[in-house]
Length: 88
Image (cartoon, rainbow, N blue to C red):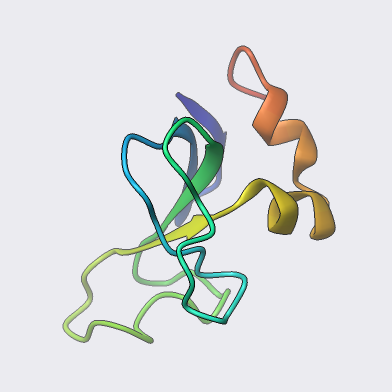
């Protein structure tokens, strides 16, 4: 479910089916376990977060997973509990 969107960034609330690395933690451990709710951010070329382009060149979208602890730490906890898309 898309829970947040602006012109160059889309955030989906996901439930993990396998272990994943949280890109916000920065320690490269698989902190997202099966069954955990997490956020998946997709940045498109032109987004000013610094995410777009740090992994891939050529203007392709970049995805990043964020565990619930990091989402709460960075003020995005409301996106984890959203039952419908939040207003832009």
